[in-house]
Image 1 (tube, rainbow, N blue to C red):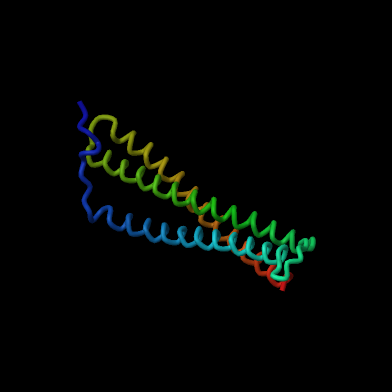
Image 2 (cartoon, one colour):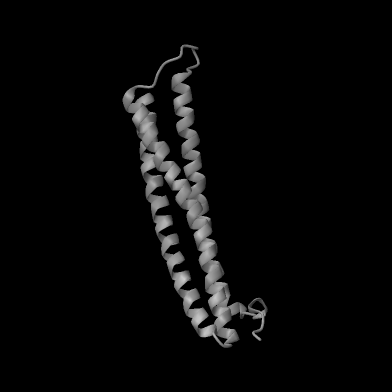
Length: 155
């Protein structure tokens, strides 16, 4: 009978760098998410101030401004979703990494195959999280540019 995998203790020196790296990436994706949401609220503010100005006369947004706001909202929405995907998948990849290490340390029947399988799953999630953070960063840049253009068109 196999011992419980959760009871296999990992040396702290073996996992501490992994947790530190993951924390830094998590902090970066948290900033991407925060800036994306800030941009979305900024675009809403721009649209609201133009459509409902202080003088009380309602007006419509000109076509180009509407397009830039729509592009900005779409890009910032994609950035937010990609940042959230990164946050989830990066934590999931670390869990597969730790499980693979535990299989190697326990070293019972079938653990080598399980470790190889866990490492493959970890690798796939590493790749997904890497792409997610790239997509989030690029979308944030597009959203920021669109927001700036919309702002200058309104001002």
